[in-house]
Length: 237
Ligand SMILES: Nc1ncnc2c1ncn2[C@@H]1O[C@H](COP(=O)(O)OP(=O)(O)OP(=O)(O)O)[C@@H](O)[C@H]1O
Image (cartoon, rainbow, N blue to C red; front, side, top):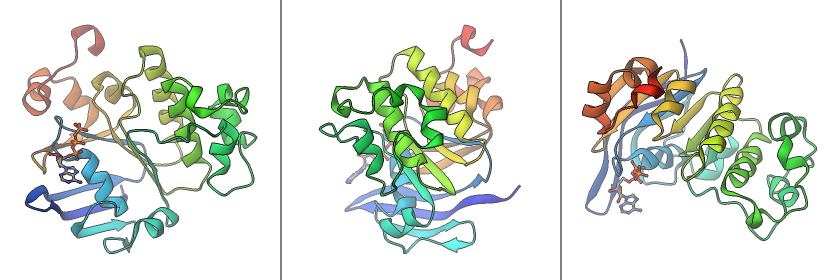
């Protein structure tokens, strides 16, 4: 299987802190790849290194293009969509205005918004700051999906969401991943099991495990060893 993204011995240093210490892995060009690990191991920093938002060395390739030295605007224009952890919708703007910020003429009327986010269509004039956390997450996802992307980087999209909304976000990501590969930072192992194909686990700035998502998530001893948690028995069924 070919790869959409390749990281080869990537390092990030913030002053004296050596946060990524030679991270290497590949993201297949189909499906969801979940980037896992305990708090503070470098997951968000890995996404930021790919985007050029963190000072990085090593090799980063988007398909055949070396993007290691590229500034963030060129990386994004070159085909990487990013949904950051804190969602970053503009609270004072309406749903429609948030979607039009990507510079396209279409907003909530775009077919992809109507198909994946029907709830947003009826809320086009509502200020984004008054939406629920899950609805704001949908706006953040929709905004990125209005562009053509070769790869999506999505950072903890279900953080703080109620279980029903976690399921809705998971369904949207699974549908998106049918056409665009997704590199997903996620702590919810039940969700990882449901939508991820491949997993990469970081610990202390290094890759400590790569493999099939189900094989990891359904192995309580391994998830406890690598992540410090395991799925509850009823979630595995
Ligand atoms: N701008 C920065 N300057 C200094 N240190 C930083 C900076 N950004 C991140 N770090 C440190 O790098 C380490 C990795 O942070 P990162 O946010 O990548 O972790 P994470 O795996 O995404 O954690 P979490 O699951 O808690 O979100 C942490 O120790 C963090 O304090």
